[in-house]
Image (cartoon, rainbow, N blue to C red):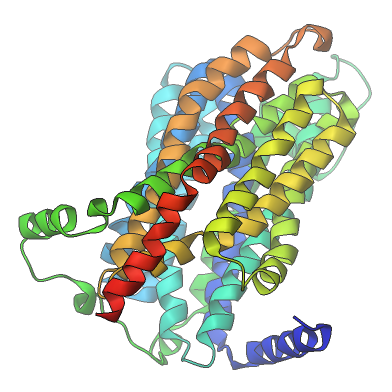
Length: 473
């Protein structure tokens, strides 16, 4: 693409943001502020469950995996049910439920023997709130945009969500080490801080707990802001009303299930192989919150530990924000399957850089290259699903295409905590850690995706031709 054409497309895209209504921007704002809290919690969840709640590495990995998997599972029905009460009420309900869940989660360490039970209930509530919010917000953007503005509306959600992830980093990396320094100060030592940090330290048991309470308040601010900002008259100004009743399949549940398995994407062997072959490389995405935070906190010195959130929540979202649209433009003529092979390879290979042991330059290099690989292939992943889907079954194919991501969330934690306890346990000298073995295992798992796709390339790519012929009939 010529530079002049890219500049012109960018100018047009920016001009189209003026077409977005006040209601759309309020929905995006609520979603973005909640994203700050969600990823702020998620980044420290393994550390919090392991150290503050006392679950240890193994069970904290399971807990985080089940939580993230629950968010996806609940999305299958919670958003539709919530939307039936009206868009405004649905968004407010989701933010309120998430606030209550996060408050209980943050308070749990103060409850001694009841902590585990409270954490489980709080994570279910938080997952339910998050599962309600995302589909409702996306549905809202559809309803408040038209054919001219819908593309820019959806892109703004994606862009601002990534900026929300980045915004969580400076908040967390400021509060966590500052409060922890106050808590670790010996009795009678001069005050290390004053004002807000000292107040947080007096109310909480650790720096991580202080961060959790801060993001609970951020979620509550999203609720208050949307309550007063998004009025009933805004909801009435929809451009494309999309009642839930119009999306409900009138057939009995049993008939719908039989039809899905007998005449749906499950019958397409190439499609099933393709989407599940990408599961191994997707485990690296789950390790960004299951393994990476504790790896940095255990294997590096204080100067890196105190900036952990920047490494985890700035590098990847920043690169995604910049390079996804750029790579989409540059590779639009390249076959989508080739992009999957190359992109998954770029994501997987840099993992082996971490086998050399803890090194900040190698860690940053890994995060950058891994993120570039994600920007290259992840944005075009669903293109394959839509290309193979027969007429009338696009939603089925695209829905199933997200199942491997659900499984990656759920299965990665089943072994990540155990491997952390074996190769990167807490409170032992750095020289005794075996982090190289840890990342070698993860790298080998991720490499199964590009290798498997390349070996089956002729068979899988034949699916494009055969499906194109079916659609032409």
